[in-house]
Length: 228
Image (cartoon, rainbow, N blue to C red; front, side, top):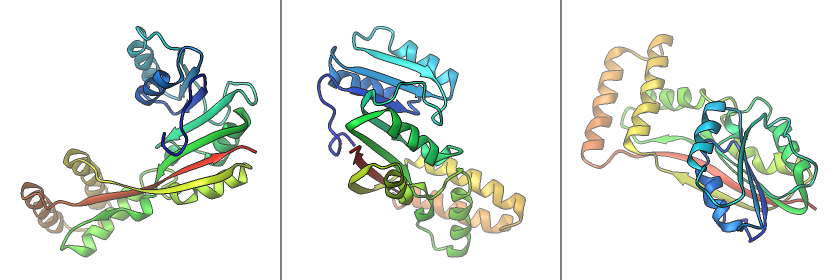
């Protein structure tokens, strides 16, 4: 993301949905003392932990709780706005992008990464069960295919799209196991597959994992744009 929209010394940067602040903290080291980093998130507990982690920092880094649909900042006050794995879960992603457009200065930039849960891939010989599992995983976030819609959202907000970078993320075994466990539980409750099918599928996946053959892939897009 930084390669597509580089952060410069003195930049003012907003990280929407900053979580624990790992990326905001990293970017703070790039803007220098003349810059400004604001991290905002809807979770007070995450913001409290982000503040705790940044308490010994000597860079201009500030965290606050807020709603991405109504950002508590003045118009045109940031050189760069960013969001990573955030719009997937928001109630109104178009409104949030419009807010990011509002607070970005003319000539400034926006960069967003999000997943396209409609393009999940799980390798398995049990094709029918696997497709059901993929569909159940995709049903969890509010906006499962937001990744493919990012260019359209940004253009509607009057940004000029400059780069669209497809990304494939390979989850760790633990994350893949957790995601699938949730989908299997939902599938059983809904009667999508039998206990025997689940047992056979799960055993296959564990064997593939032990042999280094497990392959799960999540696709998404990084979109970089500028404000005219």
